[in-house]
Amino acid sequence: MKMTGWVLSVLIALFLGVASAMGKFTQWEGKAEMFDNLGWGEDVMFKIGIVEVAIAILFLIPRTALVGAILLAAYLGGATATHVRVGDPFYFPIIIGVVAWIAIGLRKPEVFRLALGNDKPVSQENQP
Image (tube, rainbow, N blue to C red):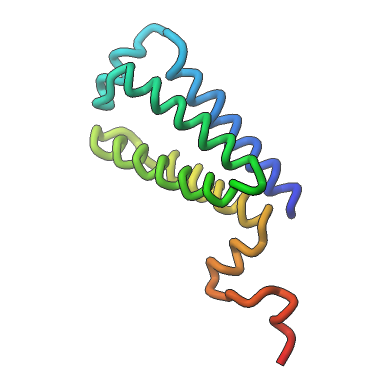
């Protein structure tokens, strides 16, 4: 299960840090129009690309993974709101967010335990 969590985490980080962010760092036809449709200028989108890369790195580092997941959820909430505002399909950021939390839960089982309201460590669950 831990390996599955890492595979999902790497895939999410690659999508965020490479596929998504690279579109914000490079020039391509229709870029200005697309970002303008979303209500963001190219300069802002460049900064958002930097944020994406930073979040991807934080999400992959074991010590900062939980902070990275929280920041990723916030970032994806903003992406969802932007797409809802302009009338675009908005389900993709939600799916990425759910998969990210599943990935972090598989990597760190205490995340699932706390999310389900069981704050006792696994070793104390069977003790009186």
